[in-house]
Image (tube, rainbow, N blue to C red; front, side, top):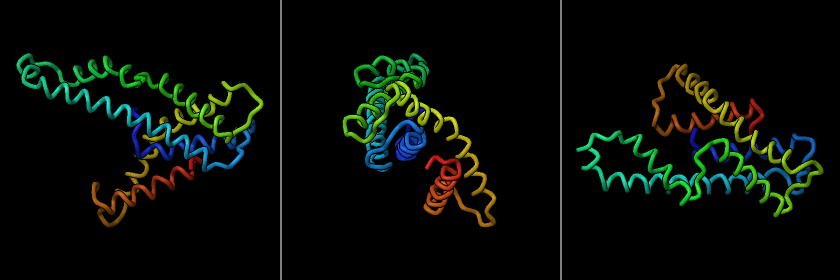
Length: 183
């Protein structure tokens, strides 16, 4: 699953909460600054990938006629170009490697800003951050499906894409995250 901007604050909060609950990390200024810096780093990563994808789209649009003539599969070509340009944009395509890199960058930033102290190995703390990101993505689909089902069961029809739906979805989504200790 691809990182998306709306998920950044939730992932950042999960990281902060998991560090707090780890038992071996001391937060020097509380949860909020940790979530703030984690969110900044995650959003930066998402923006880099978005810039890469926009460039790939530009390249594909320039060659649209040729692709149509040669009957090229657009999705496969998109992926091949993205893979080719990823390094230039500083984007890691393997999710495991990307989450690992994010965890390192977040840990480094939290340490530089003197937001955390720990007496265990750096790798153990990095794993808490990595697992927070990974676990969020493992339950994201389940939470989203549960929220959609709850909205469908309302007596009054609320249509996807409407402002009312979006507000209700956000509220119920956050409620589910709280139930699971992720917010």
